[in-house]
Length: 630
Image (cartoon, rainbow, N blue to C red; front, side):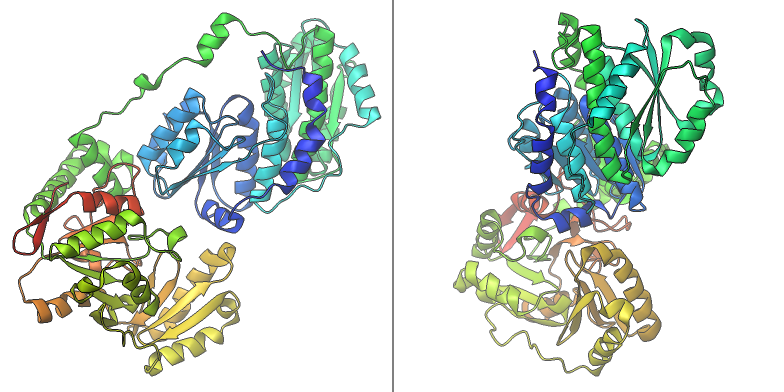
């Protein structure tokens, strides 16, 4: 089992060059999604140091991050929710730990789940493709599968992860100098048979320290204890007083911790063998440089021990431990109770809350009342949002999926009214006319610009594009006159709406916060500022997606019931007014109102997949109506 370790090291530079140049699809979108929330990074074994590196990158962006193992995930479930992202790192994407981790995470419904693999096809990819909130980055590493220890996969991870955070490494080579190899040989010659190495590190050296411990332990070539430079001073130095003859120090030193490393080492007895793995680089560049150097220390110690780290031999119980199936220890119960808990968790967003019996019972009653009312009502039609509901953010420039198109035409064929209320303008009419059968155009109502203009799909004169409202002209002038906003946005002024698109997604959070405060302070009580899945919409205070109810009452009669479905039900989402209706379902964000805007989709299912789940639960009835059973 495995490959010669020395052969693996010969490929490092080629792997580094490949990873530096390989295409990362939609890098800007990936970086934006990743860097908007706290992050949990999950991996084990050789991937652990890559997880630690990603934690440092995320923290460097001013965000909270934590690297955990798949088993630690099972004890961290209460902290993972809609306000966090998750990254899973696995070279093969097929070991039982990472697959269980994915199943666990998808049930917690974080904001987004990313997976990073060094293979394009894997069981993890198949799982990931089932969900809108999940994306897998798969790369075929030309170096092939690692031997027993992670080598080229780590070089690839360190390089690709740094590129995801716009910190592409700029090292000329990963080959060690002759002087460093001589230092390793001299250091290794001073070690006793049963030695213990204390590895000292700080900052961006931590991923390298973790990798050294992993490689020494997994290949069985020596004992490693880890400590950062200052924690070492809190008693850990006493190890040398008691175990001096069997101990040595490896100090991982970049330019960032050069001084503290030198001062620490100068205070230690001279007879203790010491090796510095040094880099003149900083931060992510230093991590990769130090990682490659550390590989060669492992090679030399393995040579002295007579063990090839790339194929050290695995006992039978080792394979049994690796393949241990433990999912049953953490398996969650399915059924109606689990659906209830999922729905309440989406409303409240915190698993800890569900442990309060009194609060849980109150929400349970609200859930049951809502569901009973929803499933017992005879509906005349469906009012839908478009982006994020009928098509995902990635699909907004192409027609909706075939399953969506078929369902809409089927409902219309049964006489069910369809209303689509969107922040879009003429583009939605043109798109719908392509796939809705023309004979049904009169029964599909479009609310353009968040309900500012409403008309049947057959009306080619709508929407009116030209702005005739002086308020919107004043808003546009104000936005263009404020550099902290105008520098980062594109503005479209329409009849009933000002649409703002943030040009640089990395600046999105800052721009939105400045824009909202700036406009509210200047146009208070005159406007509403709403967010869709791709834009910020500024509408008048009198405009509402709920206007479609008045329109349909005028043309189809009063007393009729309509089911509302959207994705942004929490203010300032642009569906919050539509989904305030008592018969409303969200496919993503929900409000905290116990009487409306529930998300009853299966766990881990959202956006278009959730819409399809709701559609499949609809059964047409007599008299041009339908019921829904969830």
